[in-house]
Structures are given as structure tokens and as C-alpha cells.
Amino acid sequence: MSKRGIWLDLHRNSGKSGVLGFLIALITSPGFCAVLLYRMSCATRRWGPVGKVLSILIWRANISAFGCHLSPTSRCGEGLLLPHPVGIVIGQGVLIGDNAEIYQNVTFGTADFSKGEYPKIESDVKVFPGAVIVGKVTVGRRAVIGANSYVAKDVPAGMVVAGSPAKVIRPVG
Image (cartoon, rainbow, N blue to C red; front, side, top):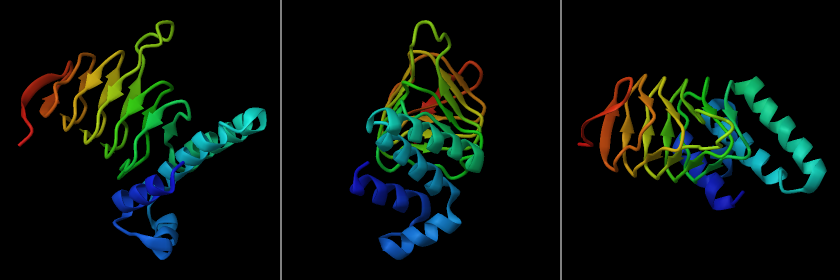
């Protein structure tokens, strides 16, 4: 958990900076709090057996407090923005780049647990409410996933996709 990463998360989720901004965001920004708990869960996981137990407790607290399942075995880049964190599921093994924007009721996970194939979301991607991204899928840089889309195939960089199954609609404009 880098200090720079926490400050980027703070600014992206609340528009604030500094210690006072941090304290205000703890009270007013559930998205920032969910990301902070995720970062803490990832950090404590490296502390051996006791850290793994603590990591699970923090992960469960995130689910209970914000309805946000951010697996500590996933990797999310800096500047993760969760405007409305309720219902977000980011499963184990998922990779998310920097400055991703993820709205409520979004799911990233595997279509088949036995294969262990998880999505890779590159930097600057925006995922709108209700989207589901499953399997060994790569979502390219600056792509936009439309609301309630089901993505099971790669998404080219800089494209808008929507539908179930998702289809390329147009370039990001």
C-alpha cells in the first residue's frame, strides 16, 4: 500500500487532498472508504498467517459496511474510483490498471473456477452500472463498458461496448 496510491485514490474518489481532506473523505465518501479497506486488506495479507486472518476480517468488513467485495488477491492500480461501491464484486485474480472508474453492481470474475481465468482491465477504463466481465478477457486502455453489458470477449482499446453479449458500438469520443 503506497502512500502515493492512497492519495491518488483519495483525490479520485473525493476531489480532496491533504490530511483534512482524508478525514472528510472518511466521513463522506463510501467509495474512498471501500478502496482504503481494500488497500489495507492487501497490505495485511503479506504479514504471514496472522496477517491473512486480519486481511479476511478487513475484507469482510468491506462487504458488511459498503456491500463491496474487493478480493485481496486481486490487484487494482492507483486512482481506483468507485462512485457508488454497493454491489461491486472484483474476484480473486482480477487485474485492474490505474485510474479505473467502476460503478455499482459491476462484477469481474471467472466463468469457470477450475480454469482460473480472470479478466484484465487496463488503465483509464470506465465500467458503468450492472456490467459483468468474466473469463480470460482483456479490456483495453480507455475503453468504456456500457451499463448492463455482458463482456466475455476482449474489448479493443479506446472503444465503447454495450449489450449482452457486448459488441463494439463506436470509438470513445
